[in-house]
Amino acid sequence: MQKKIPQRQCMGCRERKAKKELLRVVRGTDGVVSLDFGGKLNGRGAYICPDPECLKKAQKAKSLERSLEVPIPQEVYDRLLREMEAANG
Figure 1 (spheres, rainbow, N blue to C red):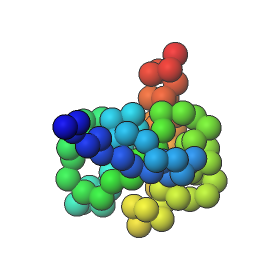
Figure 2: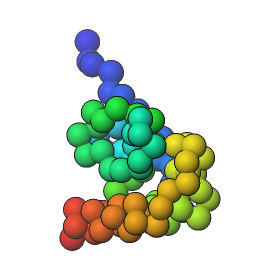
Figure 3: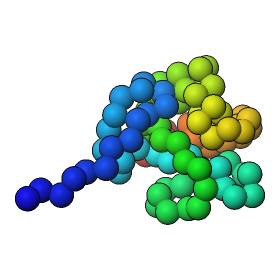
Figure 4: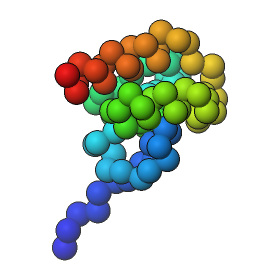
């Protein structure tokens, strides 16, 4: 029997994809928003495709902010964009 693959929804394009294909943005227990590359940090998480277009959609719709229940600083969006460009570059 095949093992079930965990699925998560991208906050940008709203598509369901395998958890390991997505980047996790986490609001830690201290309220700080950061990127979680290992998927193991404590706190509330939201997922996004490693695609700058999805990030733009999520930022425009404020879907990450709603999911994490905190305002997200521009620096976090900028860092996400740099990480995506480095990974795709």
